[in-house]
Length: 213
Length: 213
Length: 213
Image 1: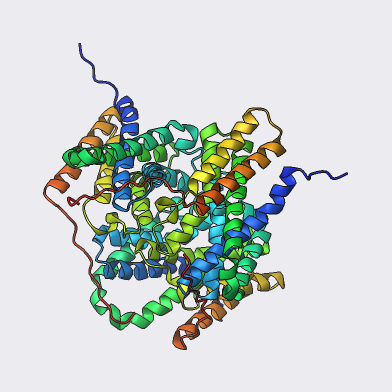
Image 2 (image 1 turned 60 degrees about the vertical axis):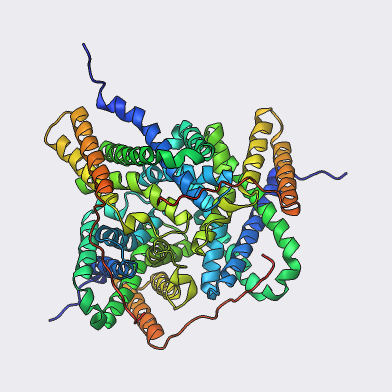
């Protein structure tokens, strides 16, 4: 008989995949700015591990994930180097990248909520912890690439993270099994993100022009 | 008979006002860059709460204000959304915004000094803690908007924060009552900031050109 | 008979020199952007002390160096103001600046490794702690000046830091005396950095262009 592995195990397998995916998108951004190889690896590490690090620093949750488990550094460096090597075929893998990145977003969000849950934080802080873990790495990447963070300008990215976190917390609050809550948040978050990309959903923008300044 | 409320109470009432004011200036900056609504709220939160968060992280003072008291998140999000709603009349409220922002600067500075005082930090660190609390949020806002921080380029902003902090600490050191020290630092700081805006006071600039680089 | 002072003592003498050197390079960068005097000092402090602060925050190592020992603030502010005063002769001191900056890089790297060693971190974390201490200040400087960090784009800067850290750790691991390990890492790191500048060594770049985005 086939039994589904517990969602927690799946999450732990997906975490390095998520880190690698975020490192790869960062490496492509680095390549658009002609960074050198070390810069590509640094940007990969900062993007993939920056969200979790910021969450841990803000919540006072030590040691940080990559300090305790430096294999995360190896994974993100390897993913960055692989991206350099396969850059030529990357455009064919465009879709795979988008899906990987979406998986990364949702997995990181759930993992971030888990950390805040462990620390017995309040409900809004749990969701914020998930959003920081999922999104802050990409913000750091954009700052280091000298862009206005994409997160603030377009696409449903932070919103996906907020929704996935809210579903996760709501499911746990309703007394659902941890595995089911994880699977539910993962499925809805991933579907939401992919649909948002596919149908170019976006949020109303606030446009303000002021000559006074 | 009329009694003045203790300055500490006034400060606690003014803190959310200060947070809302900083969130509103951030929301306007976000509107100038056509961010979407969630981006506006995120920038509002980061600007309003970033200075205090950076101070707490640097001093190892946990939990952070908004983690302990998530109503600050609600206040700054609400202030950001209100700014979107009333953007059309904002230019008429220009002066009110400047005054609110100045109040925010001084109130945050005093609150930052208080945290460092509680931690028994040394004199320079108390003033630095006040400056970080008052100014760092605006620096984060400018970085996220991809500007050279205004703080570094013009206006007496960080200076106002430094002066308010120094007066506050000096008054306490001279044995003045805590309420009087707060009121004094608040009054002088606010006056200094408003006069600096009114008369366009600024500091000498350091201009360096170098073809070598 | 002449005895060499212990390398540890030399390191402690060199630390303030390193801080001053990094503040001076930051002040020059501030001058290129016409910042005001306070902005120059702030950028000097953040650049010189930011690397160590980031390391300490990421490793949970409190109190931070400048919080415990505020004379570092005085040194970096003084170095920034001196740079404003002597800016006209700076181009004649170009070489001295490069050497000072290289000394700063290597000294900060070794000091960062020492902190991680004290905290009994694992080998990769020790080297990363050295790199953060040596390099992150310059990254903060470039972010605040609204540049893509130089570190990511060119020159062997982070690599020098990584090599110096690796030599230091390897020498200690081989059982060499602490003084000798320090001297060795310092000499090789400094030589590597100066040779890299002299012969314009650089690393291959990753150039990626993609019309899809």
